[in-house]
Figure 1: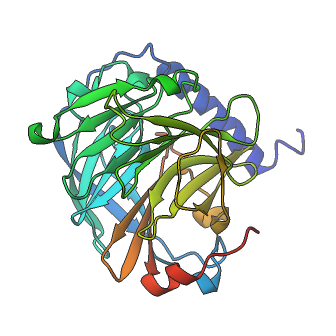
Figure 2 (figure 1 turned 90 degrees about the vertical axis):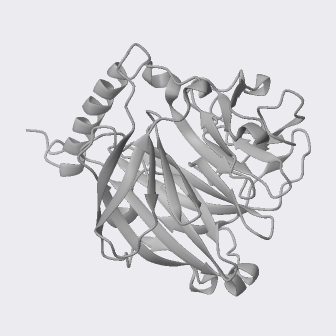
Length: 345
């Protein structure tokens, strides 16, 4: 027997690739399964030991991990979360199959009660799996309006009250050349009402990818779109973004390596200003690697209580038994975040 095959990481890598192939086969757009029905779900939130050696966060930054949970539920629609939103004491988790899970934020509870449903059918939710792949979510905290980013269809759906314009889906012309499996992977609404939308995959194999600055609701046909570029940390791709109160933007970047290893980098970019063709990027604030935190983190959210920020990160398990749905909670004091930004490392 080959010495390479004897290595556990190699065997797990082969198993993962086989499973990934099976998942792709049944999720490639030919699947026509029944849409899930609204239901309650009891979530087990197993607390994990706080990582000591797998989170590289400069002490001067004072960004502190307070909780890590491994989430599970006895429901086949639970998992595959690519987006998270924190608002009003609740977390919204959105999945690759458009499952929308809403739970109250908890600290020490081992069991959370939540609700699982679909976004409005007016967003174009269909039985074909790939056409309901949600990768990003952002909100207007004043009105409660939500925007969902759909991969494969490369479009955005606004979910609002009738007074705020109701529900509307739009595929942006500027996204037509984006890879179907590449965007809009990350999206955030800025304080001035504009939006940043990132494509996960660059065209070709270049180091920078597409990023759009949209001056208003992206579902508005009158919106002005500025095409820009984003340079992630080397070897990484953007998977989510959220704006800080001072105007800068945190970007969650992910890397996958064979045989089956994930790592994440949290970087920061300056307050966005629209300029056609401009390339933006920024220093790394935190690194998440290794056995404890080397998971497929895809969702990032920020909750601001005025004194400190609470950062949430969720991992997409791809509905695979060898991955985990981790939920990470971090706290960033106001004074510290205004002063300390690490240099690129």
